Length: 144
Length: 144
DNA sequence: ATTTGACTTAAAGTAAACTCTAATTTATAT
DNA sequence: ATATAAATTAGAGTTTACTTTAAGTCAAAT
Image (cartoon, rainbow over all chains, first blue to last red; front, side, top):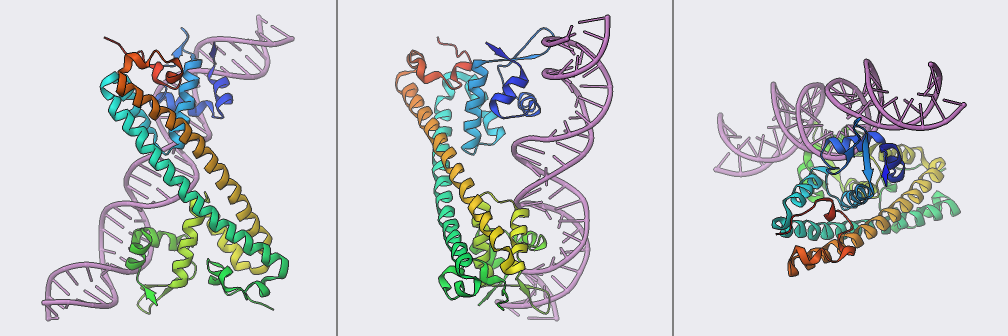
């Protein structure tokens, strides 16, 4: 089964421009073309796009993904380096999740602050010092 | 207690250039200056920088943070909009965490693949079809 | 007093990842 | 057969978030 660039764009939530850009950058090394020059995406190409998306999500830059493709092309002798890439990305991913969890905590704190503020009015909330530590106090909001 | 731009840069893990850039962009609305024009960062400014970092981590762009600052300056009448910002960022944050968890799963899968590959050699691993779904097969690696 | 290092501004430059334009060709539907 | 939709290329432009440069002023130490 083959797909046009437009179909793939829809399926992957990308634009055709982005797909051509990826192709130009060497990030779609196996996409074929018809005799008239039109790209034919196979299921295998789709799987690779899913993998590419995963590598991007883990924090790899396009040039790093390009490098990974070169390693794949080298075959067995690059096994260790490829394994290292995933090992490193796992660590990066975990760190990013931890950062986001910390960020979530602070956001929850803010949400609590705003819930209070909207329930009781700004003036009352300001009696609770703990709740105004992170920015609110920077602007002396006039109470009337 | 006041700090110079260099001290703050060290404390926050930023460069002085970045701090001046933030200031220029209006992201440090309360930082004062000495009579000779040198920036004086207060503890309150430091707290704001921590908050700014949190907002960035949650996925807000600098221009969105700028907008948030404008809202803070408006006082009580922007309470609802500010609450909405945190509400939205919480959702974005949670989605990002979910994406990263999915990504982690795929990476773990790859790590398992590479562990196997390095234990038994590429040829044997390729007998396990499930393990080669995501990219490896794209390049017909020559077995010798 | 002078050197060293940190500070100042304004503005140009950079990297990443697209995004869009233009001019043209190919494919599909009536 | 022809109109419309979708594909092609090359290359220029955009956005975000810095980063660097240049030319200078200020502050601390010897």
